[in-house]
Length: 170
Image 1 (cartoon, rainbow, N blue to C red):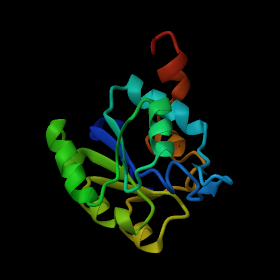
Image 2: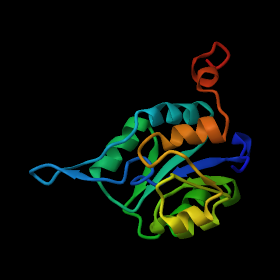
Image 3: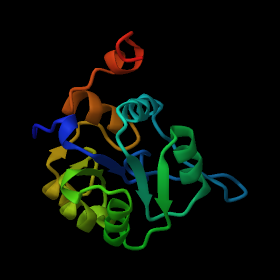
Image 4: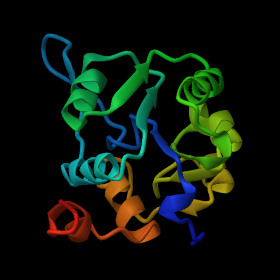
């Protein structure tokens, strides 16, 4: 596994479907969509907020499910994005960030080009083979099963108890 330090990363960008979800979509009888996300990732987003790390969701889909989850996680979301490279370059410029200090987690071919321009590219275990081939880290966790949690705890070595619940962390 590549050694990445939290201090080396200025911003985190996550694809939604297949990263924060298990890449399945469920439909009810009225055609309403719903997806499955891991609650374990909720604490991970709390940690990123506590560390003042800019965090974004970048999704090709424009869907109320994405908006609802982003709102719950208190994360800025850009959705309905046709060109993720252009969107990320604009996002980085507007927020005075650097691509080489941006960590992107993606899983499928629509993430390929954007992952290639980021300083750090990471993917879930069930990602497309071509995404695995360009990722610095292939997580053990599959999409929707705590990907962000594994990234922060196991790859970046963050102690959630220390950051969120210790006297020093308050």
